[in-house]
Length: 65
Image 1 (cartoon, rainbow, N blue to C red):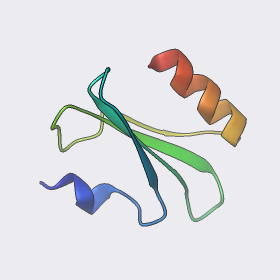
Image 2: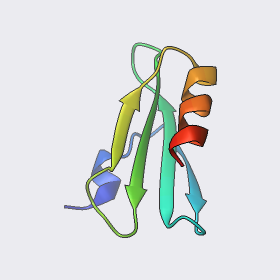
Image 3: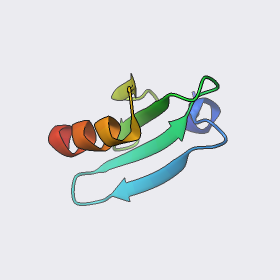
Image 4: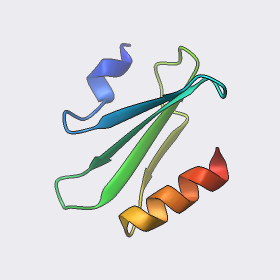
């Protein structure tokens, strides 16, 4: 499975090489902020969450990373 198939078109990616992860942030069709994260070369996301707000998304991602 190729990870590009499950990354939304409107997602912005951020690579964190010191942690070996890539985080993709996007907004779903209902307007809810979302994030998907991949470790290393994995094709399945290690995290796949929806959030109440963009501020909550950023706060949680900082804590988890």
